[in-house]
Amino acid sequence: NKISELNNDLNVKGIMVQLPIPKNLNKNKIISQIDPKKDVDGLHPYNLGKIMNNETPYFYPCTPLACITLLEYYKIDIEKKHIVFVGTGMVNLPLSIMLLHKKCSLTLCNEFTEDIKSKTNIADILIVGCGQSKLVKNDWIKKDSIIIDIGIHKNDGKLNGDVDYSDVIERVKYITPVPGGIGPLTVCMLINNLVKYI
Image (cartoon, rainbow, N blue to C red; front, side, top):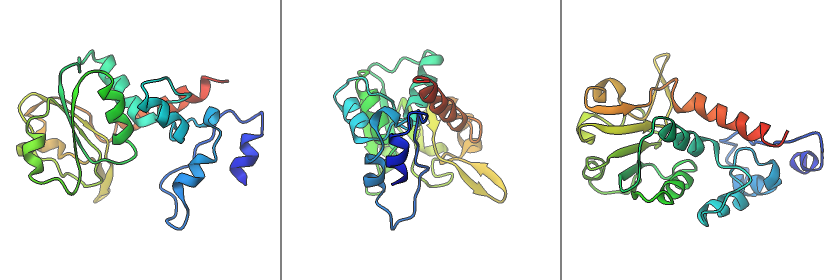
């Protein structure tokens, strides 16, 4: 009812449902109620469907857009590169499609992937968003690879990502820090999406 009210309010330019939501609620049903033209988080099926078809949606999902923007800003060429994902959630799935349209090769790994290190060890670019604190270690990556760490966890009062930053730092070419990496850039993308129609 609230989303319907906001959809019809001409003064409201963007709607975002903060995830995760309680498990007794249907996330997909709720997000689908948002007007795609106000879906500043880019998660409505209409916007995701446009991405699948390599067409421009009203809004791109914020975290995938942050990752693409980061790669473009640092002029990291991804054509013909092998990009490996650890985790296949709401960030990595649309991001994988967005990158696939840019002519790279992809491998997607999840908790059912056997011998996952053999996959991550051949990645030119490793994108990790699996919800496991410091999962990726030095022996998971090849030398001079590029890592985008999407995860965030709080341990002993300190924030860290899905990658063990201190363990891999000497082996990588580039890596996003946690905190201070993809998180703030995601917020920037959200604001950018919002001001697009103001």
